[in-house]
Image (cartoon, rainbow, N blue to C red; front, top):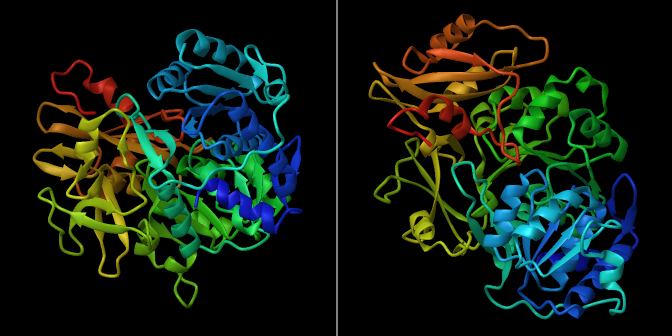
Length: 517
């Protein structure tokens, strides 16, 4: 089964239900199907073939979803283009990943001219929402072609997409994702969560990331995708109430912004079934606060580009006991291994560690990528003995629930002791004044590395460096407590909302012989 096959189930069984709605338009499944078929027929009719690589460069919008499904029905390979990337990054990805067609929004008229000049391998540019600066309009691209195209049966191992890794530690790698991996993603979510008729999914994060694929999870039951163009907290809160949203996905940073917003208590969130956070570790204190504000709907998914968003999963019933109380260690963690994966915690020699002991989280199964595009060295490094080594250090409890200790590369060695930044960040986040924080190691003549906290306070909040350091020291001891704190207006983040610790560290390590990246 492919994503387009799941969409066609929605068309077959729920043709009159609304599939997509945004601020300017609405489409039922039957109406959407007509546009998808026309786009697919035009792609093939204009000389592009099965397996050609096509990107959609657009803010979240209904027409972007239709273009995505159109290229899928045309059996092209999807190249996600994050609209929040720099144009230089998107030039690099389009060139290295072999893009043949770029379907774009007029919001990027200037950027696509730069891309056209830099990437001669792109054979066609198609503006999906009117007159563009280059290439065809979608109407002219589709003119004269049939109204529909029928996809051939799926071939074993057939490539569905090439996803770019986050690029937080260097140039993005191309993750080769086949249809079987995305089908396994669907299987894991439908097995672990409740996807029923009349679900309403709010698409907030970029469609090129997890939010887009999670929207597709609702197709087989005729669910509605409300496509949100603006990710600001107030719009999200209003849309939850307005559309009676049942499902949404956000990175922790946006959740924290919502919790800190002065109007967060003013809206009705009773429709929520699964408010999912992911893409980065989430503060336990913020999760507990979110449970009070948004109800017992908080869920988490753990994955990475190489095994998308379904290595482990956590639903409300996983951390709420029979009396309605929170089981704290389960809320703190990332859930249990998803049903259609194998997950183990391994030591550096590849041996499974005892329950309660830290090791690297490793995953095997059909969810996992085939490898990296044109990069056998990186593929060999990530895959050993049949396992994908995630780079995350975790601990599995006796009941199978996993807590992430930290990223392997983020560990700080201070005075010979291992300090995991996530543990320190969790404690800093307990303070009511803190909206978000990051902990890094910086050069220190005495300790080798010293623990530094970089903290973003809530609007109008005040907190002293001394008070914060003393608080952490009382909780974790002097070795793990930050030696210094920087207060910042905003933490640097990647286009998908991950804090860029490499950028934070570079400020302190750039003149040193040793670089920690």
